[in-house]
Image 1 (cartoon, rainbow, N blue to C red):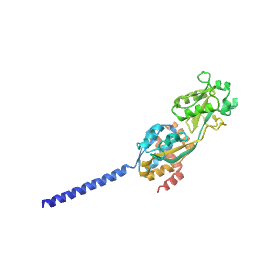
Image 2: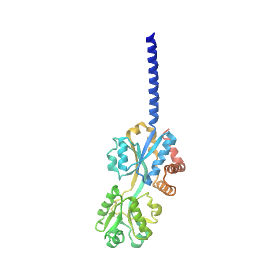
Image 3: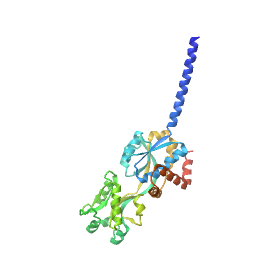
Image 4: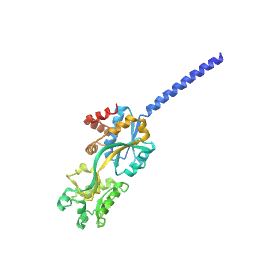
Amino acid sequence: MFKSKSSTFLLALLVVISLFLSLSAVANSAEIKHVKFSVSMWSGDWLPTYVPKVLLEDKLGYTTEVVSLSIPAGMAAIAAGEVEVTTIVWMPNNQPLVDKYLGQTIEDLGTIYPECLQAIFIPKWVSQQYGIKSISDLNNPQFAKMFDIDNDGKGDWLGCDPGWLCAKLNDQCIALYGLDKLYVQMMGEEHFLLAAMAGRMKKHEPVLISQFYPHVMFIDYPKDESMVVLDDPKHFWFTAHVEKFGNKKWIAENPKAAELIRQVKMTAEDVMWMMKETRARGDKPATLEALAREWITKNKASVDSWLAKIK
């Protein structure tokens, strides 16, 4: 009799434990529906990040986070599985960094926007007044003196943050065109370089700047109107594109979410629209989400075609 009661108790206990473990497995399965996006806090990150973020939340029931990391730190975090996705890697600029992890712990999720111009710009009035149409035309001591901001005897070629690949590219471009005796790259944080450029523009003084498109600079100084591209006869500068990458394990475990991210595409002009709107409205998370939803509504046909691919 006692043994029978003990057996019954043990059986009931096993049923309870089994039920508990089953419920825990369900809970853990639900917890998988989460994704962290890595961003570098550049204004061009917002639309490519917040559109897939909103779609994953609204259409697939995911919870999401956006974490701020440099591109190298973000890629390392994705490779380690600490972050799942980034949608803002400029290529082929970051090809050496990507090659460290690609096919092993990260996977390419496709291009989010193509045709990103990288070039050397000067004010349109300078080009017209002095006949400077090409990078080769800069090989003139009088022009170098005209672009000398800090009065050190060399023309200042406003470039990049020293930690960015474009800083190396600018130095290579100066050397390739034989301009190193006349010009020097002025490196620094982006806001410092933009302030230097804006100061020269306001005083109607010549300025020479390496820049890419889309960029906030072109809100105030529109491309082809205020600023013009110098021709590149040696074909040094290349057109870039922005790529999406994800943690390989997460992609395998979340095929629908990964496929939705693969489908998301936009243009450089879309990103410029977001830059202008955040300039006007601010960049708090709630504002960024609202702008992403506006973009989704305006591009309903495209978004519907993406969603059809994951049904």
